Image (cartoon, rainbow, N blue to C red):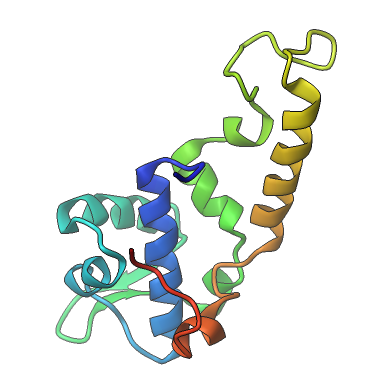
Length: 145
């Protein structure tokens, strides 16, 4: 069980795969990406379309086309991907989903959840899309189940 939606999970795995392949000088098609991250192609196509529209991933058409990341995108924080699919609420929301929860009106989980949420936020802001390329290329990290 992850903390992100299935869409966001596929988006992160796809971006890590594309980052790794970009580092190796390759562009990747949807079929290839879907196969390596265990994602349905049609679903992945919609995810990549949204990421492309947001400028997080680049694409090229033609025989040598596919998805890739430029140097700027490789250095973008994971928070950009998460925000695209989960919105800002994941960084500020209540652990119990209550709309009134705040410092002035805390829910029972407020203080403990705030600590966890802040650590997750820091991780997503401080971790770049291309940060794991070396370990992925060496096979030390996996992107599929």
